[in-house]
Image (cartoon, rainbow, N blue to C red; front, side, top):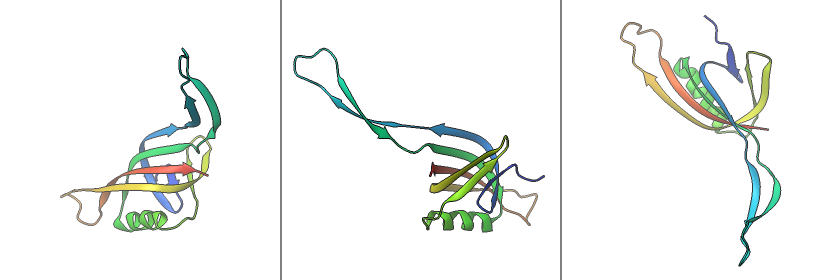
Length: 115
């Protein structure tokens, strides 16, 4: 079964996808005031947290290579999702499978910053 999601050239079977967006605010607390004054300075890029799994150590090596460069990669998925991102972090864990010694299955968690 083919994966529905890709990051660059890597197929990923996505189990969860979360998106976060933070504004940049300065908070000024004035002496004897009863409220905080807020100044808006802009917003940070959206961040995707992707959890899933993939087959093969070569794909892990490719994702680690994405972390080693400043090149943007496209996260593509169902419902016409296609966003240009940079891979900010990658955690991978090999899942042992004693029934199949020809493949390696990895659980991955990635943080992607939208560009």
